[in-house]
Image (cartoon, rainbow, N blue to C red):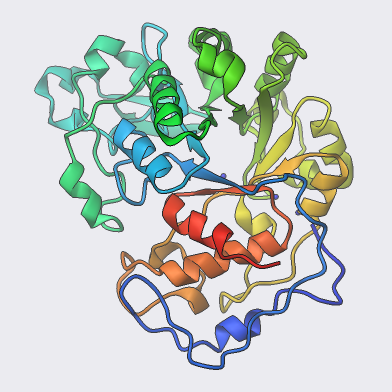
Amino acid sequence: MPSFHRPSLRSVWSFAAVCSLTLVACGGGTTPPAGTPEPTTPDTTPPLAEKILVVGHRGASALRPEHTLASYRKAVEDGADIIEPDLVSTKDGHLVARHENLINDTTNVSAKPEFADRKKTKVVDGMTLEGWFTEDFTLEELKTLRARERIPAIRPGNTQFDDQYEIPTLTEVIALARELSASTGRTIALYPETKHPTYFQSIGLPLEDKLIETLKADDFTKATATVYLQSFEVANLKELRTKLGASQPNWKLVQLMEEANKKPYDFVKAGDARTYADLMTEEGMKEIATYANGVGPYKRSIIDVDSSGAFLPPSPLVRNAHAAKLLVHPYTFRPENSFMPAPLKVEGADSVRAEEGAVKEIQAYLKAGIDGFFTDDPAVGRKAVDTYKR
């Protein structure tokens, strides 16, 4: 799924301790030298949530091709509390789990000659894109495709699973969550995202009513599991709030936030000059609280890094959100070198896993008071939570 909390500055995360580590490859992570001082604990507002939630971002997408039932299953097996399907529409109005409606890189569609004539150029959220799009396929046609690893250079191990898994529907994801809840004894929550809602409305395939209908069709999501409904846009969340009112107390709405200088696309279309930075202010959070229960900011909007990769002091985002009684679930924590701040990388290529560094990174955000987080590797996320000491 892309931004601010500033605690009292008398005690903040001391990243100098981390920067002083000798970072070496050691299996899957880093080993600090003996006697390395532990980072100091910052003076922060505690999380609002009683339990820090580990969200399996697109499943366990560091270990399986994203948005497949295998990825979601692996996420739960590795300790995720929640699985997260991004939702787009088919030509015949079914909701399926893909990160984008453009499926060039996440399926084998380019290798299917029968669909060669479906390749098109479209403008989605102001960007010109070329390839194959879910809205040009019926569900039956999409089911003939198979998922592929989106970033094979970073996750070469996932390519062994290419062309094995179907594109799942939201209905199938719900059924899997219900099954896993029964087998694990834990109620697995869902965190569906409406992707490009303004675009899908513009082509006559609105996502909102179908989302509500599908969630209500299964008693598990209707009344048992917690369901977080997320969007980078604002208008469709407000529409969902109006449609739902207080009728679904187990459903929570979450306002996603990209980098501070960017804008929700519905703001762009409406000529609204505000950016995500405006939504991150104290007043912005108060407005969000009128229709949502939480925010999902880009992680660097909470704790940014300097030119060397060292953490800067936390911004006011968490404080502003908590003051408005909003949960904070930042994204996305990934274990590979490619995504890590420089001081937490290990020796090797971008694809090498820096697991211990990833744990340290997540725990810096736990110190800032977050209530949960999106991670591509729930096993690493679970370790970070379970070994965290405030």
